[in-house]
Image 1 (cartoon, rainbow, N blue to C red):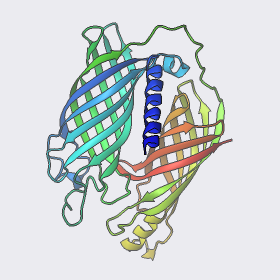
Image 2 (image 1 turned 120 degrees about the vertical axis):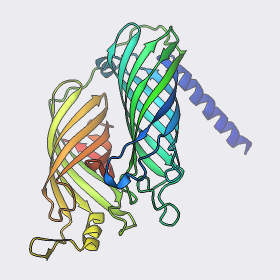
Image 3 (image 1 turned 135 degrees about the vertical axis):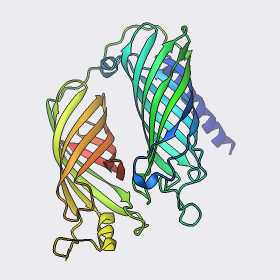
Image 4 (image 1 turned 30 degrees about the horizontal axis):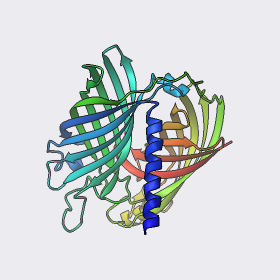
Length: 365
């Protein structure tokens, strides 16, 4: 037991010393936010819940990048933020949310004493009162205790002195389980926040190091295989597996962006069950049993070194059941582990309705 405690203590000390050494290279800030807003009525099925005025508080640690890597300079030394938030949704059917997030704040404009930033963030959300068939069947927004966060924010930074900054901002927070459980309407919270940052660590002066350049690849083709589980209707309560195969070609536009086109095959057993339980028929009452779908994609990748933010728009060219909208979207993060190997996590949605959360592995040719 004592040996184990010693090992744990040594590991904690090592991690602390490593963090201190790492932190010396950057400016660090402690940021607090007071949050007030409303729940957006994004479709007709959530009107009975979109009538409260949530309030929240947020505490985050922010790291100002120093431009050592070329992509940091390309984005004018953005901020990385690691935060913890508490939301009171002011509705007993919805309960409270505890949010852990990570985000990047991209500078849109900077002057000597002000700055305008746009945030892209993600994370995990814990809900205290999700949907329950017996005790909370009115909550069709949040159907599982753990959901995925998507967040955007527009922040105005005002410098008061060398250490204190005001950070008023407008924010949109979305939480959804990606149809892992039904019902899955998701919750969208629009807020106006007032915040303040305090600089807790200044970057130490050091010799200028050589900038790590961004890799330029004029054209690339990759195949991405992804999968997971989802639930499409309340009639099919147990999550069913799905998998996708995407063949995609991208063209280098500049050091920040790639554009591409591709083809997307979708194989969802949840859709198969939905067809079976919906008794779905079209045209001359011929029963439809084919649940396979094929789509054409156009997409964009916003590059941050080995990490990329992907956005794709797809249209089904083969979708015999017609239980999905003809257009769909995919939003996600992709990381290039190796010259040829990449991993991806993404949301596939039809307008404001999430269909699935996808975990994928890809190979670049």
